[in-house]
Length: 118
Image (cartoon, rainbow, N blue to C red; front, top):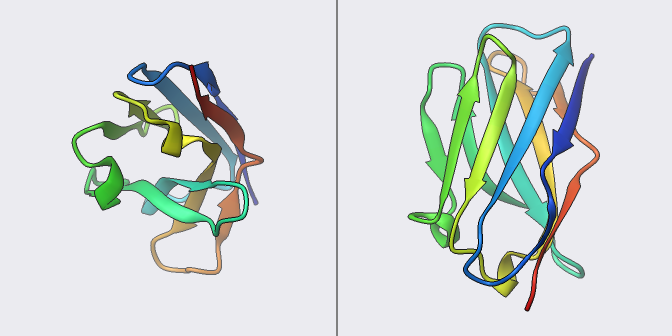
């Protein structure tokens, strides 16, 4: 099992910035992908950004140039730096851990709320 604890959400004005963190603990394997997904009210959960243990990143088109994902493998922590936030970025942001070899070894955090509003 892997436990994921997110932090850093909150209320921010349009154009502002937030940094999300997700710390993983438990049975963690060296080859994995960690990522951030989000779910807005009435919408399906969607990928925001992901990063492999080797540092390869993948971003949704709607955040390219605004969000940056990074990780500290020594701390088993992934970060999401969100800049130039828009009201449409309002959602619950979820951290995800997935093993490189076993897609079923897949875990989610409880989510952190991000609200972008003036």
